[in-house]
Image (tube, rainbow, N blue to C red; front, side, top):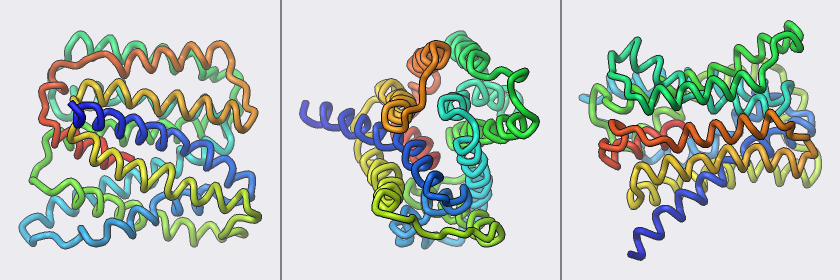
Length: 300
């Protein structure tokens, strides 16, 4: 009974930690740091912690190369997401990120030839309705339209990872996947950070340093560690429900601590996405817990 309670609690704490990413990112933006540098800091610490899990047998190098490519794509997607957080209303960017159930359904059908359940269709429909509530093309400038399109890269790559990792080509340990995926992030982010010629490499003032440490530890390394432990002891359907907490924390923390107003449509869209994430999907629930752990931890 104790482990049944401890597992969901750790997953809940992890979701809360991940939800603070937009808050810390926007504080660092206010300090004058560029999205390239902030995104790089987001992944450097987890990479250092995972270096011990890089050694991999030669027979698994093809899978390593696939994880590197997925990590590279996710690095570009997260950079686009952080650019959107810098320019677009935070609620809009956050809600766009949570359109991944729709893209997961689409990619699963078109690329991986997987069957679609009624629950999956309902979930995707709710996500599309939520996105339509917060995105008004007529009120966006041309630059903002490009940022919106770029922001959709994050949920698209997220969805592709979910579909691939549900049935990977080769078996690779969870921490090994995380390590090589993180290396893929850095392969693309380090050159982009250098190429951007950032004026500010480090925060200016105590608040900036707290935000940097918060991004690296509270919103990245620590919740990832908690999730790895908690997910093993938690039912998949419970993980899906608790994971919706991340969206709520992300939107409310930015609204309360950064004084960014949430409109009625923002709140309605947030509730619709939460409902979509909580809808049970029979096929995914039937998957082993270890496989779900690989899917979730690789994506953060």
